[in-house]
Length: 124
Image (cartoon, rainbow, N blue to C red; front, side, top):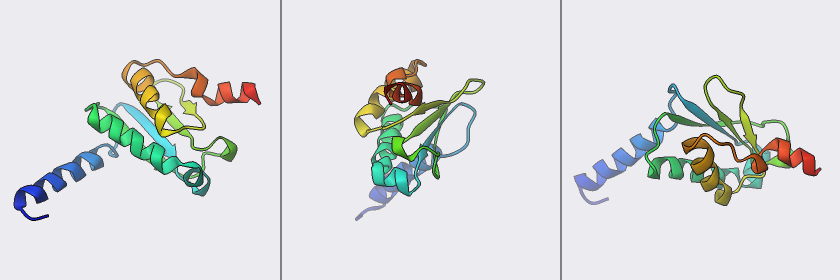
């Protein structure tokens, strides 16, 4: 950082990242970030979600972290809460899957059913 302009750009990026984590009326996305989730790659999933939402300038979505969601064998896990609807739990998430979930579910309102816990439990 060499100029006040660079400092202001860093400040703006930081504020945008913080705004993604504030409570708002709208969609809430929660990433399991307990030891089991982190070991399975949840940090990259969380970063991918935040990047996708920020880059697409999607409004009214809160991204948050939680501890263990409870089914460690399916980590990384992401839960999506739409107001007034049942949550959708995505399992075995990867950064590659994040883009599809953002496009189809968060933008267009259609859950990606083959990534959900229900689909995974049918396989096992």
